[in-house]
Image 1 (spheres, one colour):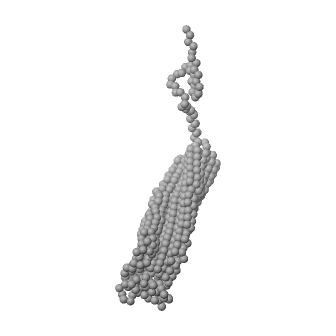
Image 2: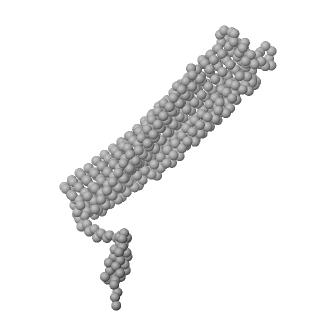
Length: 558
């Protein structure tokens, strides 16, 4: 049977200090239970063996040494209902063996640890509050349930050097750095709440593993969740509230994110950069102030079934690669998906509504868009700028001003695409851009089927234009090859061009207008380095640009 010892400074037959009771139990075999009466005990305890220290009335026993650690445990030690304090050392430390803490309060000072699990130890903590200090696990095992971490001067829970930690149904409030950090360790977090952390509420780095499930993160100063330096793990069913950035994936990290919501981020809902990857399934970003998702610097995320509602830009990709399927983007103030710099990306089954522009490519970006549905946009459905290349297949664009557009030196390639109910044109090509379209259908009374100007190029095959009011094809100075095309309607003309269009198997009840190109104006060369003379000049020789000047004086003889 367990030996029971009582600590009560004012009671006859009881030990006056906890240390006295531990000394008494040291020579006995078996387990020992030390029951402590209410009071303040200014002693540092070194507990060995199979020992349970419990307050007779939970919360009324305070262990507060003036210096040193509060409790150092070796063996099989249990602490119940105690208030532990330490000023310059660990509040509770499991030096070896196992330590179980239940219904306690651990109060640290400064940057000391409220709880410390060194290598090889095992710690279990339930229904306990850790104030001001952190829980530090180094190469150890730990299970924490229904705990509260408040006002940590550093990180609330820090797992490092291969630790294996599980945290359930706990709360992290006002931690100055992170709420929880997995550094080269494995951490599982379930049903926890994080509020008002100074940096990322939950973070993993140095190839650490972090699994987050059914958590709620609110009011983090910078980032909700961060994976960096090759970290892995999963995030499921988690809600991240107002932060600068909801989730950051960087430096080769590669988490799986599923069924999460990022709401009202001040910068970005999701930021993937510096060779970061990640798989994102059924993720929702709402009302992102700048970017729903920001991908840069060789990031390579893969999206499936994600949704972006409201905010500024839906997805921004710069010098990176994005693969996205079944993405829904609605109600933005700016572009739904914008590409810049280098890199190639793939969008499949994209759905966009109520955005100024659906897809925009800049720089030398290469974009493949397949089975997209764009409706109720304001300006342009798909837009290529600069030297970008965009290929669209089986895409439908409805509403707005222009369905498909290319400018500068961009190349836009359309296959089996449809434009309907646009106000100006189904397609527009400007500058030195090229539009190649096969089986393009334009309907719904736009002004023009395709508008091409400046030195742009058009190759159009097997297409149909219905209900245009100005022209099926309006070509100004452009080069165009049109084959097997129908222009149906009763208004405007079929083609308006200046002789540079080649029409083969072209059918329309409307007329074709060919306008002679205006002759180029004579070239005027202005020389701004010679003399400017106003009026007639007689018997004069003018030279300029000489380095040597010789002047002959007339001979005047009388």
